[in-house]
Image (cartoon, rainbow, N blue to C red; front, side):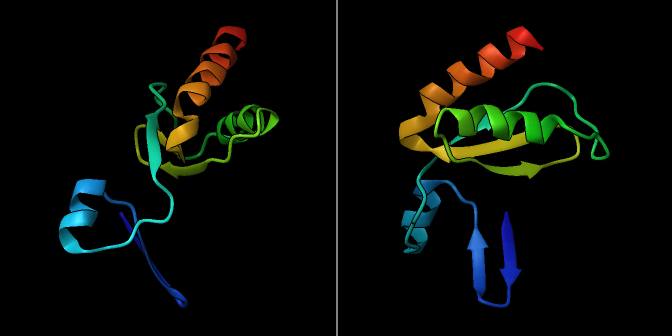
Length: 92
């Protein structure tokens, strides 16, 4: 995935590809896909997930695709993020 902004280009790529292309990486991430089928017009899912992660000091970047939301958290926080999301799912 790539975003062209005035300041430059942000790309979300697998590390092996970034290395092969000689690209520097600044946010090595764990990629978490929410398995719930979420509508692009749904209200509240992203906010609930972000709040749960924030309460646990986990930063998160979200990409909403057509069928699922994809979360990118720092690779060191991946396991903890999964625990937080499982707890959130159990209480929802």
